Image 1 (cartoon, one colour):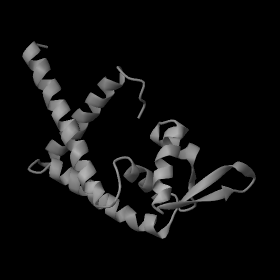
Image 2 (cartoon, rainbow, N blue to C red; image 1 turned 45 degrees about the horizontal axis):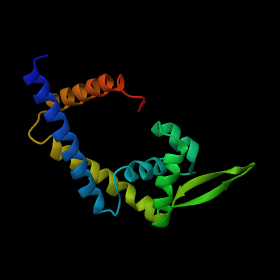
Image 3 (cartoon, rainbow, N blue to C red; image 1 turned 30 degrees about the vertical axis):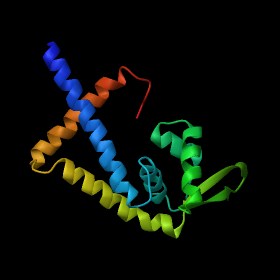
Image 4 (cartoon, rainbow, N blue to C red; image 1 turned 120 degrees about the horizontal axis):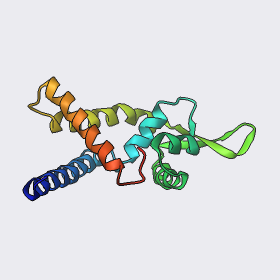
Length: 149
């Protein structure tokens, strides 16, 4: 790869990543959420009976302390409650409150806004190619990092 191509690729990837994260923060702030909290709430919304911290961590491919920190911020906002797990005194189930459940369609709408805005003017075929290419970029970058998800 020529240096000019290297510079162009790096510049484009950094600009898009920063701008997407900023747009994501702006859209989610309307819901009083920060990036990452939306995914946690959405996962909780898929499990009516609740889910444990370890199950959330496994789904996200992160460590339990990371999930615990994020959950403590959400708990202060009244998004969910903790329920004891029968027959396991150490474990608790995280269940959405009415406020948390009401946020799920709003989170999905925020994601739709981001995706539709980011891909505006693209055909369905171009969108599919974009996703395929971004997954290829992700897979390539995983060779340089320990991240698994």
